[in-house]
Length: 469
Image 1 (tube, rainbow, N blue to C red):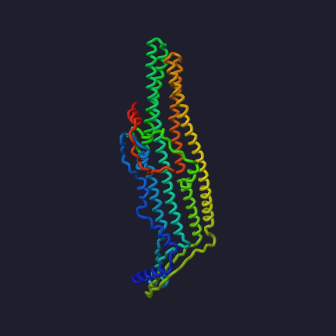
Image 2 (image 1 turned 45 degrees about the vertical axis):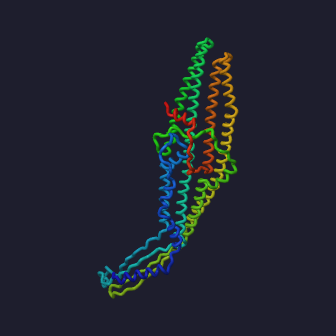
Image 3 (image 1 turned 30 degrees about the vertical axis):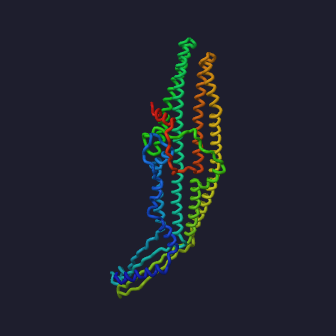
């Protein structure tokens, strides 16, 4: 085909596109174009921590543990790649469909004067499908909600990770205090055994009492060994959150006695609408609404516009050809597609309401569980433990005076340390339930500044004895 034909074809196609607008293209293209080129890397940058992989003075704070988890937790990378994928699909949803090029030959290969190709006529057409009803813009809206959904999933996992890190820090702190308690019990058992030996040497006690106190010392040493193993297990579980197979820290800087502040349930309930669970349900509702709008737009048939040039081989003359085609929505008008999208929207609305009710239920259960745990820890600290300590001291004094038996001393000692152990467990339970309550309300701050803790005598003793076997 001659260059004259091609030039004419290009001019006519340009005139056609300038006269016939592309419905919905400008808005859809504008939405897709405003996405910055580095949007795919935004989430990856946001999750990067700022704390280097080191443990000053050999111990770890909860804030630094969270920074390490945010730096190196492998699942966070999957969410970043998911956001990148959805962002590319958003750009793709705003693109135009490609034009089609058609070459047609007629009046050739027949009989008579149409034998061969001397009288063949050639035509070249370029056709473009014009989407009507704002379909492209609706697709962009649906794709944008998919990006927001992926970001919401990422935010929800960060909240879960924050809660998991804090919980495992509490587990390590609980194990550390249980180790200190076991060591204190072993030291006290050793002191009592020395006291019994003095009484035996003076003839005030029988040899069987030494056997009983020696057995108590052996049990205390066994508990110490088990507590050391539990500390190591808890440290490995915590370090696994940032991929560290062998923990390089000796202890965590958390004192269980410093309980979190108490908050009223009304103040916590006001934050439920801002939680990742609520945001996820709301994003799903929004996506269902956009999908319904897209299905409604698909009822409108698209316009196919074509323009071309026809050449008559015999005379060499040229003529322009054009065409418009439109599907007649006689039988299929996307009725079931619209009905299905409407059902999805209703289901999303019901899911949102159910999510809010479930969160309120979890909040109430968590708040009352925390209140019960706080009361138990307070009663143990202020009433039960002082009474048990006083009882043990009185029994020990009476035993020295020969008024109580060794069995009563052993029972008082056992009861005292069991109550101390219950107190440590109760303190850990308060911290865990507080973390769970903050997880429900999304009150955890993944980027809180890390304080610079001071070395306390308690931490110093843990550093000295925490890893001994």
